[in-house]
Length: 208
Figure 1 (tube, rainbow, N blue to C red):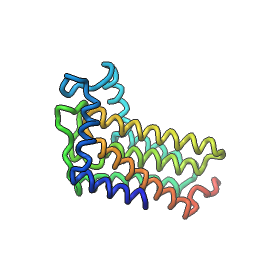
Figure 2: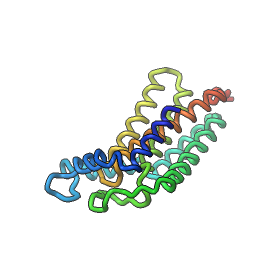
Figure 3: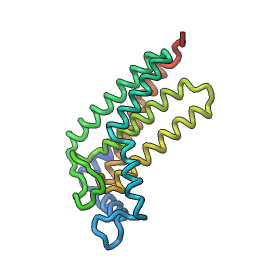
Figure 4: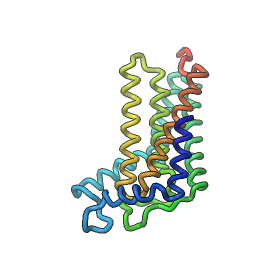
């Protein structure tokens, strides 16, 4: 509930322009001084960031989700498999719906370091990477025999989600508040799915 409230507060501040000064500062900070639209850092860094941002692309997330879904079915975790699939598909629909509701424009094309289209708020890459990585990690963690393995899975999911979000700002295709909102929405979604799995005792099926 607190995550949802945080998203709504951030959405209100972003759309009323209260985050504009901070958003613009972060975007300019990622630019090389004196080079309009040029990305900050060594020449290889933009390519690395484009590789990272691809981890949050629909193609990669669909492939990952499908592979995990197949694994769960093969291990006879049928309810978990279908919960994971429903979570990913529902998250994708929600992300697109939110963009249509808020209709926030992206930063100017001069800043773009990769292809991007559609509305900006919330960041679809940030939100969907958080939804997919965190949801799959928390569900799979329920099958892990040791706490260290569960913590490892969740930490990797958090790291990937953070890197994808940061890459969107660095590449100039999102405002920082778009990415933060995407993270908050994604975490809220993953927590909801985790609570549902816990409530329904999903992940405790016999592996006969």
